[in-house]
Image (cartoon, rainbow, N blue to C red; front, side, top):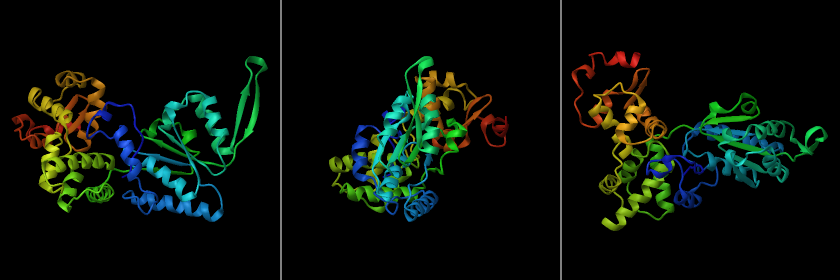
Length: 356
């Protein structure tokens, strides 16, 4: 229900990847909530943002610039559209990688209407010259357009109408402090609890005209990695299975059978995740093992293992990154139904690995 635009990562090809492919984008347009009242989850962010927008409307002013950070698929793009809807303003959507020159940004800013919302996705990937121009635009609603080259170049100040910038980033730490400081409101999007994802699944099922019971929704929610976009994608795949293999009603059993076909297990791990764990446990006895060696063992690029598989495995407490290399946790052995070697058993030095 709450989603963001696509990114160019390998995760976009995975059923449990948080990046949006074209199918996701097409479906999300119909499923997105239209106001804060419909938006599920992110309670603190919704409450704080509601106060910011209400106060701006009461003053008859544009809303403060907003920075939204968090993992892909949690609702940053959706919230930007809600901000525009709540303020009764149009929205312009672009992304950091699309702005490679200051002139690109100047062209966008100079065409904004008063009160318009400019959504800048992956704002940390914007070029430095454009970033420096954005400082003045955000603070003074003015940009200096350079005409000519060399000693004869002239800076012509261009006044801008008041606007609201909504920046979204998956890596807030890469934003320079001067840019972060110019946002009046910043919010970090958290991963969703299973109960919240159940509500997301029920709402999406209703909009997609899919029959689903409570246990079926819970089964999908539990495998969705705390991410609404993944929950909606799994719902669509389970819907297909239910239509072909059953009577169309999604129950717990149907959901489990469908997701088994797509190799998404009870904790949301897919083929790549399990391959990493199996290599770590079976080939290297639980580690420690270097990232490059682990990547070769699973037949993937080092970056794919590090950026696509590992973050979720670490968050689930199945894998740990230590100075000596990657180490499996006791939960990883349990999840794959394997018995750890004696040296890896609790009480036999395992704690030393994590304390290293």
